Every structure is written in C-alpha cells, then in structure tokens.
Image 1 (cartoon, rainbow, N blue to C red):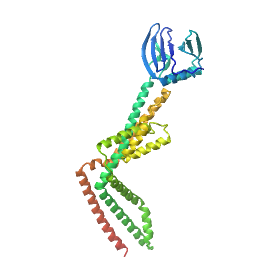
Image 2 (cartoon, one colour; image 1 turned 90 degrees about the vertical axis):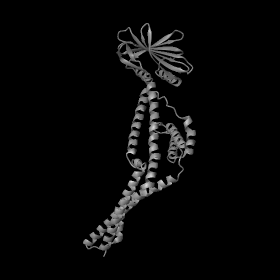
Image 3 (cartoon, one colour; image 1 turned 45 degrees about the vertical axis):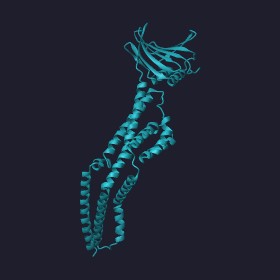
Image 4 (cartoon, rainbow, N blue to C red; image 1 turned 180 degrees about the vertical axis):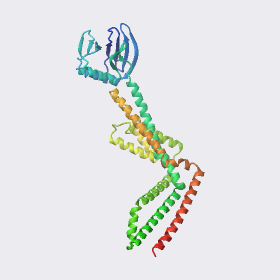
Length: 398
C-alpha cells in the first residue's frame, strides 16, 4: 500500500445520512503540505459550514498514515466518502483523480469500522450512531481544546512547583534562620535544661527503687539505662544544634539582591518547565540528574549554576508532543490535575507547620521580645528545678 507524502493533497469526505434518508451530515478533511483542516457540514444539495478545525502538518501526516493502516485499497490523489446507510452497514467510496472509483463495504461490527472510529476519535471526530436530529455527527472536535487545557495545566503545575520549592528552600529557610538567630539559642537552653532535670529526676527514682529493694546501686548501669531512655531527647537536642549551625551558615552567605532573586526564580521556573519529571514522565535519567542539580542550586541560591543549566535545556525546551489520541490527552489532563491538587495540599501543609508558622513572630520585634522573656522565665524555672533535684540526689546518696 502506498504511504501518503507530506507533499500530497488529500480530501476525505465523511458523510452520514440520518434515518429520514434526506438530510446528511458530513466531515470534510482536507490534507495539504502545510496543514489538515476538518470542516463539519450539514445539508443535502446545499452544504452549510457548521464548524472548522485546523491541525498541523505532522498531525495531518499522522492522520493519513492511520487511515492507510485500515487496509483500504491504495490510492494516488483521491476523495474518500464514508457513508453510513442504516444501523449496521457502511460503505467507503474512494474516487480517484482519473474518475475511476472503488468501494469497500462491511458491517459496523467489523474490525475496520471500529478501527476507523478509533482513528477519527483520536482527532476529535466523533460519529454518533444514535442519529441525533438531522445530524449523525458530534460536530465539535475537542482535541485542540484539551491540548490547550493540558498546556495551561502544565504552566499551572510549574508555577505551583515553584511556589512549593520557594517555600521549602527559600522562605522557610530564611524564617528558620531568623527565628534561630533571634530566639533559637534561648529555646535550645530551655530544652537542654529540661532534659537535664528530667534525667536527674529519673535517676533519683531508679536509685530510690534500688534502695527500697535493698539492692546494690550500680551508678554506671543506671547511667547506661538513662542513655537508652533519653536517647530521643538527645536526638532532639542534636537536631536543634544542627538547625542553629544551618542558620549560622546561612547568615554568612551572600544575600541576593532583589533583581538577582527575581532572576533566580525566573531561571528556575524555566528549568522546571523543561525538566520536571511530573511534566515530562518519559524524561531520561541524565536529565533527571540535571534537574536535581538545578533544585540544589536553587536551594543554595546559586545563580551561576542555574544560568548554566538554563543555557543547556531551556532554549531547547520540550514541547507538548502530539499523543495521537484524544483519550491519551484526557488522561494527561487528569494526571496533571491530580498533581496540582497534591501540590496545593502540600503547600497548605508547609504553611501550617514549623518554621513557616514562625513567620508572623520574626516579622514583629515586639513579639520576639515577648518570646525571649517567656523563654528566659522558663529557663529560670528549670534552673530552680535543677538545684532542687541536685540537692535531692545528694541527700539520697548519703
């Protein structure tokens, strides 16, 4: 079978007659070097244009190849007319440029008919067997509409990715740095004293239990047991120290200007659009690695590295590929909507947790002073408790 060329001019008429045998509905598909356009017409002797939809050259060529795969006899320049004469029979009439013609007929239950419907459906051309009114065709191709919706959703998704990452890697880090540098030291001291007091209290309880049972008091064994029981407290103390170290390191870093921050976000959103795995599920491992490097550069405010990665990928940004089927586009639309929903929920969660919840505090000097006084008061209370339990330990060890 001959394959169509992108230089050929093809015309397909898809004509469907309703039950009154008078009024017809028809799609006319015209293929040329530059485009495919699909017209929906209704009428009998006079055809009225109801709708028109255009597709690009690649889509046109792909469509023609799909039609050829249906095992319809080969043709040069030709007009194909697809007639549905009743509830079951169909005829494909092919007229050649030399005025000769050939017809292929069959049942709607045949594989060819179902395959034809599948090809037409993938381009938004839906044939309705129920013959609604005078039209047996649903005349509004939705492929382009869904394709545009997918493009908009990809843009929306990339913006939510930026918002989420900006919260995680920039705003929350800055909030935590400001919080730790202003009240973090006092907060750590208060927690450390609480741990010391609680451990001392537990030590006294263990020693008293030994004395009550008249058992030998092994202080090293008690200390080992306390190490196990208070491991979680020690882990939290280490975490606080780590946060303070991170805040100190961040405070030493070069602060970006407003214009540099704007450029950082602009470069990052471009990279997200070009490389994010959610936007490009089939992306290769090397590009995923490049994207992760971009994420790390964004976290660290590394403008130079983002500029380099941008030069590598953004100017060759992948476009939305034609999926070849409306159903695939609809699935892609649903997938993107689910991802956006998940990102929105993630953003809400980030804003409901530490350190974002400290934002209002660090922006208000009066609130910071109040927090400092509160922590200083807590520290004094723990110091008093420490003195009390130290005295009690001396007393019990006599």
